[in-house]
Image (cartoon, rainbow, N blue to C red; front, side):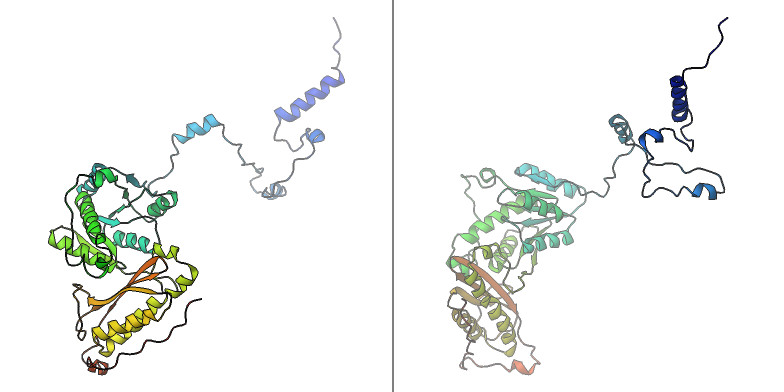
Length: 383
């Protein structure tokens, strides 16, 4: 019988390494460190000395798990769905008249109120204020645009909380064979209507179509286009359109210029000269409380604007704030000063509602019509 012999040295070494690595992987002595070197210590690893001080005698456990395989990750995704309860729903954008009508009707069927914000193109802080006002009035907001929104405009509308956007197709919204127009006869031909005779007809017809299609509970407009706002209110009264018109105050830049997309077309010198509009309106608001008559206040504002060399005054008038009827005598109710001034090729609109002096105020003594008209202050021409 052959005598057993010890395994060769290489076999013993292999067995020893195999046993140290795989059979006792948690041993304090790892023979692989002789080949690969010691394992680097992690920054947040537990202190090895904690083993001796641990009353339970437990050893630190490495809790860093390797990344899941794609298959395992897909399996877990069936049970770990992301929480989308508070995520903003996507904004609905359509060009179809029937689609936006159905969307608005669906909101109302669910017991929600609908606000309409008619916009043209592009957005600034004044338009966003209209949307904020609409959200305060109703639970759902629909905005209309005359042109398809770009990526930035879409993001701004959705971030502002608009639920749906209607961009009507011209051929469907205003077909070529349409024979019906809406024209405010008196308001459409006075003030700015003398310079733009078709503007108020077109705007009133457009807004009436939007109100008939969407049938909102509230429609929000800015006060900057004061005459247009008055024309829309008159149209809704005359045609018994069941909608509540909400007006938002004009927002101004830090220097007082009313916010408008038209400001972007102003040359720097014209932009500086246009500040005379807010200066004139601010001083006229204070002068209205001194008992000055409407005709004299109108003359003062016109002279103030004309003292600016770069200003081309188109219209300066004072009307009753409620009806836009012309007034000339002492102010007995809130009145509105309406300005239309051209700087270069850009026409700017501005206004200010002024109130008469308190009858008990000493300044309300009044000044007769024959008194001297106050001289407007001299302004430095813009560079």
